[in-house]
Each structure stands twice: as structure tokens, then as C-alpha cells.
Image (spheres, rainbow, N blue to C red):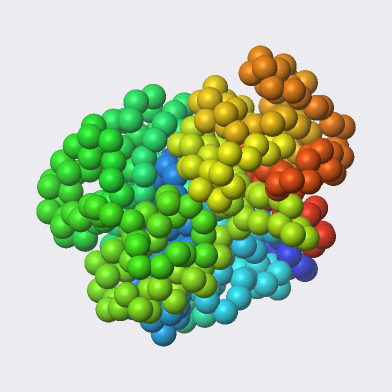
Length: 414
């Protein structure tokens, strides 16, 4: 490999990787198939569970991954975006990918694609890095979360043992379509010929699309009809019990024999940050990356389930392109006071603009110059119940980093 194409450390490697975001998001499989073929990926005998949907993808992936681990299998998990560090995107049951492994893996990929036109995108390269690492780790199973959509998402280049569709709603409408049916068609694009598919309950129009696609592909379709009820999972909220049931149905449909007792143990061990995550002494913070109306409604339902009629201080941040009106309709009934502070994302709605919109709700608003100031103000305004951070995973990740005192926050623009 030419020396100029190798990276001395993960910082240099990730700087190069993030620079590939200039190529944008290019939906389609030709380039990623070329890259995976050049790297002879995925590894032989590896089996995949592929997850698409609007809400609950990450949690469902986390539950499925923990089920595989509980069953005594070696399993990897690929998710996006990360919250604090890039390494979070690529993990197995033992650990995350290390900085040294990132540098080595991206050096190999860069040498292969240096002269390619079109150049692979950030997400395509990240997927290849993950699959290369999973092969080196000799994991038996991999849980893959789609990045955007499904039909033309880079992860759809993989043939899974089971396809999974979580709850579908309106999100990324500028790319995936402005109706539920259009979005459902993109998500249902992960359904493969003869491969079983499991789905959450859906709106009737969405289910029509899924059923039609499954029929055309002669793919056995199962729609779960009740949430997991035999225990309380580590992830709070009724919606998470639905996600747990979906994950269990998917793992079983993929051919893994797992008992309810083992599933109960797995669900109790599942960790998925920024989903109604309690932080701080006495749990004075709840962090939740609710960023669209459906996830905001689930957040409110969980808040009421846990805290009843108590109203929190809410530190809210949003990015352009999201349905802010729908999010505010969900969150306003439980909000005592809004807090607005800057966070690191080029798509973040300016704090002054957001504060004006929040002021129209009739609920008091405080505008802060820094995220640290906003966090401190929200936490100190009312000690009777936790303060709440919501509205964007980018905000949630940065807040998690500050509140946990970890340091090393790496903004995620993907």
C-alpha cells in the first residue's frame, strides 16, 4: 500500500472519512456493491438481520443484538449516527472497534478507492469498514441498521436471514417521499425474495404496501400483534416493549432458537443510550433523542408512565427539515419551561429562531449562550423532577458527553 494512502492514527483516518461527506448522500447500490466486491465482503458464513423503519430501529437492533449474545452467539451490530464517538457505530458483544482498527481499516479502503469515480460516500465507506471488522472478528451474526430509507440504502446490498420493519412515519420526506405510502415503499425495499420479514403494527396504508411487497417477493410476513409482556425491559416505555417483541420475532424468524426465559434476561441487559436515559446524581436528567412527532409522542407517553403529571424543564434542539410543529404538539402538554441552547450540527436551527417558535406555544422560554449553561439552568430551575433533553440525536449526544464527563465528543453529520 502506498505510504501516502495509509493513516498514522484514527484522528487522521476519521478526518479523511468525514471529508468524504462532500460527496453527499447518494442512494443506490452500484457503488457499494463494487466496494464490497473489491474487498470480498461480507465474510463467508456470516448471517445478517436487516432493520429498516422510521422509529425504533436502533432500539430494535440493540434488543436483537443482545438476544443473539444471550443465545451464546458471537454478534456484531452496525448503527448510525453515533452519539459521542464514531466507534459506537461498529460493535460486537465484547467491544467497539478501536482507533487503531479504524486507521488500519480505512487505510485499506482508501488504497482501493483512491482513483474511483464516482467516489464512495461516507456511509458506504463506513459500512465497508464495519463489514471488514466483523469479518476479522469472525462474528457469526450481524445486526444491520439502515442509514436512510431501505431500498437504495447501502446496507441493502447484503442478503439477510430476516428483514425487519419497525414503525413507519413521516420523516426525511424530502428524500423518501411526502406520503406514508411512498416512505413505506422505500422501507419495504429491504424485503428479499424468500427471506422472512417481520413488521411492527402499521397504519393501514403502510401495511398494504408491506403486504404487497412481501407477496411479490414470496417472503413470509409476520406482523407482531402484542408487545413483550413477560418482563420489564431495561429500556423504558411501552413502545420499547413493542420493539423488544419485534426483535424477538426477528431473531426467531432468522432461525435462532431462543426461549422466553433467555429473552427476558437479554431484554434486562439491553442498553441503548439517549432513549429515555437517566443521568446524574438521583437521575436528575432524562436524555431522549425524540426528533419527529411519533418519537416525541412515545417520549411523552413514557414520561407520564414514569412521572405521572409532573412537568419538566425541557432543553430542546432541532435540525432543519424536521416536523417541529408535530414535535411541539406532542411535547408542549408536559412542558413547564423551554430551554434553548446551541449544539454542534450544521443543520441546527438557530437558537433565536427556535426560541421565537417556542414562544408561540405560550410556555416560558429561556435562551442560553452555551449548551453547558442551558443544561445547568434547566437542572436548577426545578429540583422536584428530572429535566428533559429532547429534539435531536445530535443534541442528545453532545449533552450525554457533557453530563457524563467523558470528553472526546465527535460531532456526527451523517
